[in-house]
Length: 413
Image (cartoon, rainbow, N blue to C red; front, side, top):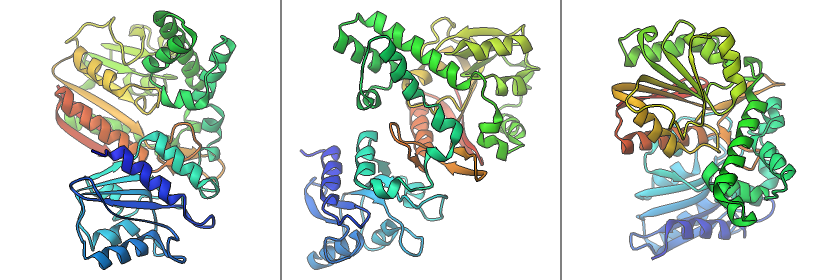
């Protein structure tokens, strides 16, 4: 039986037929039996949109139901509504798969099907990159670009990793890195390509990632951060904590994972005597030691907290750490669950934007790995993935709190 990946690739292939002057968009409607009902692409008939072509085909066949719909780009209409919404007024489907947002989408709009429908899913990263290449002339000029954020465009973890590997005589392509960003996958790639024993390869990867995050975040401050738009972010965090716990935070045994430069830790936890700070990079921890010398400090990845005992902490906090494409969310959540006591609380935040330095605006979303495009949906996708992991691992009372600059997930073990 043909799978979802087949139809996603099919939609990308047919969209390639669209005229050069048009945003190349392909759509495929599939039956419950996983058979093609019909497909369309921009400009397939005269200068018609993919929506007009598909509706014409559907009306001609009297078919108004499908099982799955695959759409490469969630296109905006001239009235700033979504073509997909117009389609769903006329046909019924059980699942929808979307590649990318329209390159013109810079804000969250009411009625966006990707945001409001719980049966909308996304194409994987490699196919998103293919769609970007197809439509390079449009997305290259989008205001949804990391190039507008001077700090983040100049400090790409991926670039640093490739450079450091090259200096060690290990050459891998950007494409290979994009496919193998989790540390275990990258170590396996090096092991297979250069016949370096896996333990040594894993050590190389961990050391390079530690250096990369030190390089990017050790001197990081809020001048480069979208929280400079939200001066009350500390109060926001405290209010979220108060909604999930009645116990004063200074009395909790806390684990703070991914402290970075230590800005948040010093601001939020200076009056918390029972706290352990964890980060893959040591320089941020050294900075916190000066301010909070009586705290505990552990240099470690969030995915491997083996030096910490299980059932030990009452509160796990990780702010804006789970965003990284090098991060293994499954392993990190599993470790969080292991070290927490019964009825303990977990609070994780996902950043959802970058500061556009020159214009003093927020570029909403997160970067599609290996590109400059900031996908407005990607932060929300990460929240959904975290929620799924919370459920699978056994967390309960899961709540989501969206804010101007990030989204918080809280749960109880």
